[in-house]
Image (cartoon, rainbow, N blue to C red; front, side):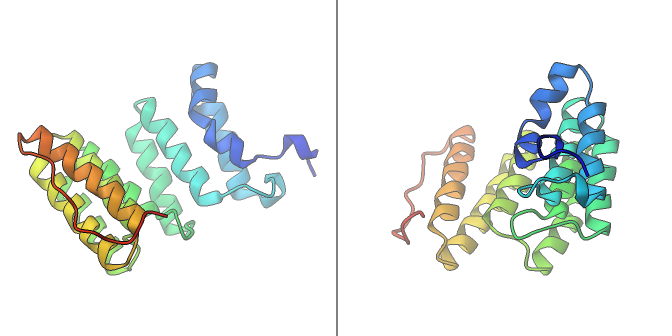
Length: 187
């Protein structure tokens, strides 16, 4: 078993991109994180496999290796590597948008919704990907749907986050900000 300081930790996941940029290549970081996903003996106590796979995908994406990033997310989904806060299919949908495969992305996001895995962050992640393509109306629709769902669920923080996204998109479209109805306080 590796020494405690050689185990892969949450900090290693959080610093994956800076470490890859420093190395000039994503490959060493990707290999280390995926090794820990595959072998629990390489993990520190705070290691999160689902977050690690999303981070690996993000690093590959930032290095322009989009298809490899998508393959990592599809592997996470196929192997059921998810947790309460990380749903690989949300990230798959967002990446498919970036790849120009919007119909496939919409189908994947529909699967997320059907499975009940669509918390406020799912709408934020997918909506921001749509927003980045310039489809402001589509992004606004996603953010508004997520904001309404969060408000109905009593999630003040999610409502606030998506309200901020709604106002950002509305401003970009030339409309004034909206005022949200009173809801539960952000927590």
